[in-house]
Every structure is written in structure tokens, then in C-alpha cells.
Image 1: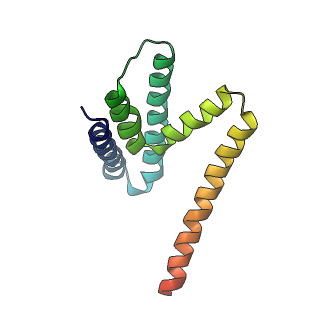
Image 2: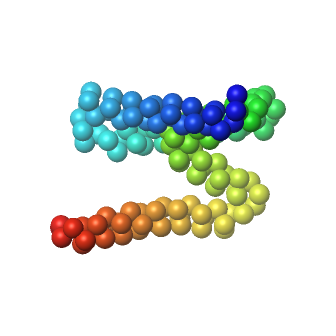
Length: 130
């Protein structure tokens, strides 16, 4: 299978999985549970990424380019970008770059939240909203 097609199919499956978990929490429990759904998806996705990465390092899990594209980049990437974020931070720490890993983690969270708030505030200002 073409790697790009595998990533696209995995991405579609991951996005649908994320949507399904979100709907499950909000429909069966309550709409206010959306953050719990996001947390659950992020933790589950990171756990799956960790297991896959550990198995690959141990040589017990062999995927070709298309398989890695489908599972790691496509499915887990769309299910939760936190899985990719966690893998990147782990790799930095594994290479001894603890300071760089800290900067990456803190910077990702702080800058992403700042960008979100800036974008939302800009739109509110432009549209004359609150």
C-alpha cells in the first residue's frame, strides 16, 4: 500500500475514533464531560504509541513504511497529536536532551495556549464580540 494512502486512511480512522469517544462521553454522560473525553483519548493514544515504540525498539514489532504511516502517523496522529508530542519529548530525553525536552514540553503547552487565546481574541475583536 502506498505510504501516503496509508497515512490518509489511518488519519481518517483516528479522527473517527476521536469523534466516537467524544460523542460517547457527551451523549452518554454529559456535554460537560468533553474535557474528560479529550484527556482519555490523549492518554490512550499515548499509551498505544508507547507500546508500539517500545515493541519496535525491542525488535518485536515490525511495520513497513505503510504500516508505520497508517498506525503511528495517521491513526494515532489523528486520534491524538499528544501521542506524537510524547514521542518527540521521549526521544529528546532518551538522547540526553532533558533541558531541550523541558523547553519543548513547556513551550508547546504555553505557546499553543497563547496562540489559541490570541486567535480567539483577534476574531472577537474583529467581529465586535465579547
